[in-house]
Length: 234
Image 1 (cartoon, rainbow, N blue to C red):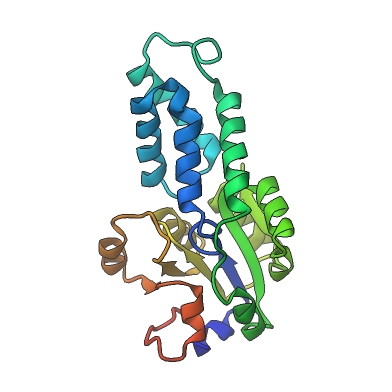
Image 2: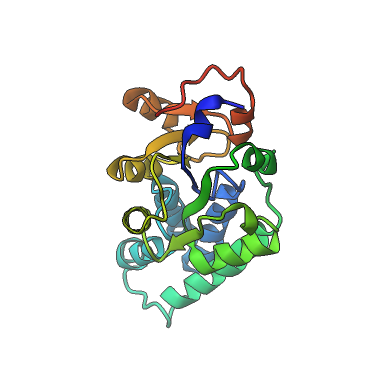
């Protein structure tokens, strides 16, 4: 076990790409939901989604309606010529739930929980909060996160600020994420951060983490290996 991790009072985890191998599930769900508007519009939404990892589905589909559709279907009316915002969200949620129930879970997650008995564990995700809680309960993961499972429509900034103010997050705290947004949110909250690279869809993560001096691990199981050689932030 990397000893420095045990020094944190709260361990905060993004869900997609950190605890669950679900980034591709979300990407394909965005594509499927937008496809009735045409391949070009769907691919533009996918590109926007990948470029804005960690942002909620609500914000991404709102962007799709406001900015992408006028470019690719300028005369179309959502709800008449294709799915409106609510229909897009419904189709997306149907695809996501099926994928989240079957995607891989981070290896040795229970071992990491056992190795950090004094720490409070928390999920802070861009995913829908109700959906996350349902999936984590169904997959028998919810009990690991005694600090709570939180997601959209609240933003990560809002969740971190609220939980820090209420004492839900006790310092020192450490956030595990796989996106630029995760690092930025952790920095704004003055919370230490580690980037998990194995399942990330952030194509520029190497340059970004080098430029910002961010600690990188391949996945959470790396933390259980004393020989990682990584300096965990304090």
